[in-house]
Image 1 (cartoon, rainbow, N blue to C red):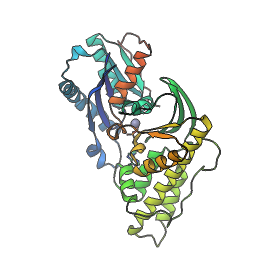
Image 2 (spheres, rainbow, N blue to C red; image 1 turned 30 degrees about the vertical axis):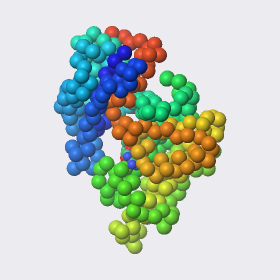
Image 3 (cartoon, protein in one colour; image 1 turned 90 degrees about the vertical axis):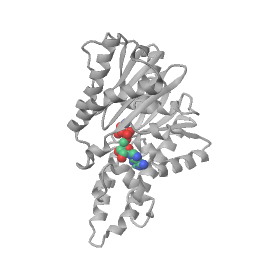
Image 4 (cartoon, rainbow, N blue to C red; image 1 turned 180 degrees about the vertical axis):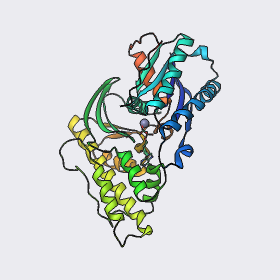
Length: 331
Ligand code: KG4
Ligand code: ZN
């Protein structure tokens, strides 16, 4: 089965075609970073309009790189949420319209399920069951994944998501959008420990997280009268160290709790190199392995949506006829 995947939940337009038994045939991605940079964050209406402009082009390019035509598509999967309502509606409208035009089934996919399953697309994939650490701009969760659609939530953030904390903290210390990667880059030039930030909920004995206090602690440190711009790298390094320490400790606790030896890391923050290095080291100590999506599939993309859709179809999921169903769920 050849599944066309469409992702438009936030500021990335993604299109991909995945074929069951063959793998990812091709994908195309457009990032709207330049469009939103001047505003310091994603402007929802601009995002929606840009998805409208880009989708037809990316669709055509994806067909070109795969050597396929529209008639070769057996099904369409699209991100139905969570995300920006207007942006989601663009992907949903295009997907549902294609479903009607091509007379193929159309499947709404949960964005996080896409992220969750994306490491299975790599050359050395994990096998079920595994523990998944989902760290994106909107979510921070630890899950036990027993199979496609079989997810048990172990714990999650009680306030800000890890990526959100990176983004907000970056903004606080004057770094541009997107803040996460910029903060991570600055942290590489600094030393943790000179500033002392809390490790929220490190000893809470559950799998929950809290990151909003960290942001406030950064603000307090950066507002001190003797704080100079040269201090920012050390503060960024300490912030990153605090987030990473908590994520690593809770992930290891989740492995211990479930008795599993495989940890899958998904979502944009999974691109963070300090997080990767420390997860790898901690897992090695427990004779466990960490699996990451290919770097280009860490952030939002259409490939993970096509793939999640293909797995769901393969698991026997059926869908209602497409006409008139726009199942977006922003939250
Ligand atoms: O999964 P994603 O592309 O979008 C969703 O939120 O669904 O994740 C984006 C998040 C942003 O908050 C971004 O700042 C963060 O991932 N991020 C990073 C890094 N790269 C992206 N955070 C820390 N270090 C990075 N290298
Ligand atoms: Zn995402």
